[in-house]
Image 1: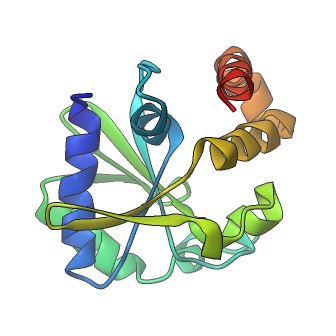
Image 2: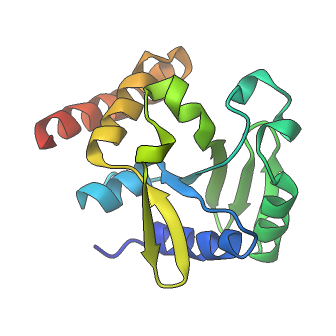
Length: 164
């Protein structure tokens, strides 16, 4: 499956790898790679190591090596948009960073169980369909996401349940 946003992710992953950061591809782009199904992705969600308390602490402290990530993204031509969302933008594509260390408490996913992948010069983590199901089920319970992405998450949950 040819996926332009995945190609962009691999470029970002390679740049982060050079700074000793191994990212986790999240969101619909990751789900597209795992399932081979087009989910009409609008942005790119990347998780990196950070404080497991997530949103409970100031955003400038939440993601480890934020200064390295900032430099990597700026060197790739991205503009910094929002510290709270840890978001960048380039050519109409929003790239947001989250914290992979929140996954155990949020969705019951052990970080040791997340698979490491290599493609070309990029090393990254990618969830399995079962792990994506846990993420979307947990997200669906979250009031912010339920109001924002209710129908999209319902479709993904149904699809993943059928797939599994």
